[in-house]
Image 1 (cartoon, rainbow, N blue to C red):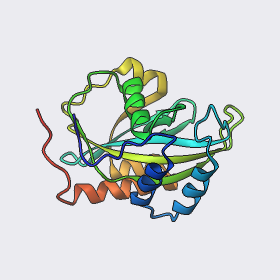
Image 2 (image 1 turned 90 degrees about the vertical axis):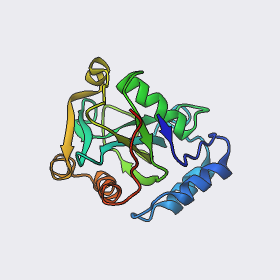
Image 3 (image 1 turned 180 degrees about the vertical axis):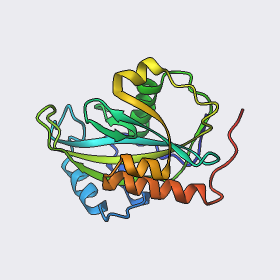
Length: 199
């Protein structure tokens, strides 16, 4: 695996997390809301069950021009992978933990891009206590032909999953945040930022 330009920040280090937020892409104009929420502290679900930070990761194959998404069991929506930050955990640590929990230990080579994205998800559910997610996004370049996730782990999170074209993903995922993710991935695919993965 390869990491390019990741900012690894501790939950208590608000200055570093502020820099991560400042560097992230913000097409929806959410940075001030993120910084305001950051100033309130208690950023995890354990500390604040209704409003907390999450880390999501969007896998894509720039050669196949496809993304990997699934129909999430609890949310009953097509989503990318991700989850809540645990107490004392950084966003990058949360992403790596979620990756292991949802994909397994041996998934094949991948590369994290240095770009990040900010989105906020309002949640209206009688099943969970969450009401607002402050989502920090990572982008994961993968060769779909070498990608070997643990299907037993995936089955605990998703009804079904697979590689989809941008058009297919847009048809399945109509949320604004997913639309912004797909726009960024499309930009990566059409740029020189994607590099050859190790074999």
